[in-house]
Image 1 (cartoon, each protein chain N blue to C red):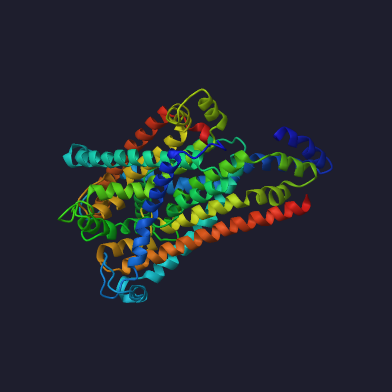
Image 2: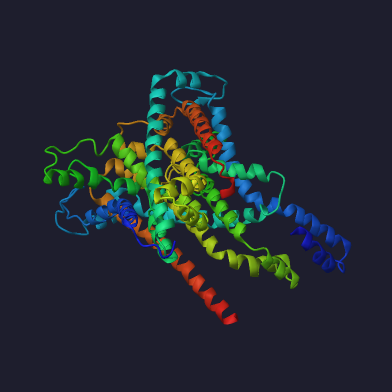
Length: 277
Length: 307
């Protein structure tokens, strides 16, 4: 491929790609601009002055319900989902390296978890808890509902890592007298770490943004997406955009932190292997 | 791998008492079950049992106050004999088909550009990240963000009016089937791009070279070499897009402004009216339909080598 001249098709495709990116980011850029509407401004252009009125409005309790509380709950839930997703899918990844009774069934169950519509998970857990007489809570039933969505992703990523993983490293460690635990701790985990950070990112953001699976499982306290959804039906001011801008900014920050983490890790490793070799 | 592990273990354990060796071999045999346990337990409690609950409740009876354990077929009867159900299914399938075709065209083109036309690996990764980042942000916010663009006084309408193309604002832009499909494409195009890109990156570049040396035009290379080899990625993307759209209710509710229906929305409405057995019967049928669609797609394309 290298060396071929860039023909017309390249520029056409590049233009298409540019339009696609504009399509992806254009709307969110628009509401970011509109969230700085003046106090008299509406949901669409023109801008009626520029202010941070709507951001202030967002933090006034009575205006838009419990924004702070739902934000805190969503973060706590996201972090819990993240930790459990990394842990459970990594452990299961180790298990799947060997054949065990029911491994096929478990794999299909995990894949089915991706295919089953979210609202079914929500309804099923809601009904189950209802029948058992257990009160649904965001840290109980909603946590489980989110895991049914994040775990299959985590598992598939861990599978992909182990497929590319060279077992010679483990054998070398074993030959040098490492115990199984030492092999995992000092050889396997450091190699897997960047991908595990990816699994963590999946776990956190999928949970943080999950709506349908939380609908019937969150109990009496809303998570952020439920709160935002509630706002869409009864708020008709740019305060909605201010919230959108803030949560998107938060998401971008989280993604940025994860990417920076992976990059620092890689650079650190390069330096270490460079020094060793 | 286990074969190579036996001698070293045996030699290290030879000094240890026999009991330790037995315990270790038991542990080795039990280990996979302990490791897979948390995953299996989570999926059992929060996926399998809830779905079985739905199946059970779909045969229950209910009135306006509560639901009763029973075995009646009325929920299914009412569901399947109502013309509303069939119309709603038709509408949902229409959404799924439209979204599938559009995301497939976009996904294939974008993935093809990234995989075969962007030459530096760094740029490939950067542009790929640019495509994937919106996936990590809130779906509801991404839907809301179309309001200033599509609304009656939105950017598109005012742009078209000032360009002299229309006199009256177009009413069909927001709160319509058009807006629903647009939002679906916006939300789920990524689910097509990523697996197709993944498949394309695995295509041996020598095959493309060979086809070109053999005199194939660029279009022929795409059609006869790249497309067949990208099929597993297309299948995975299609499964994601179709199942997500078939089960959706929030996009349809928000973007159609309550003027259009989908099966998911129908279920959500029944839930909010506390008609759980009706919702359950509806959910069972939806699950069956989605599974049939997925199995059909897997029949056409074998994706096992992608996993």
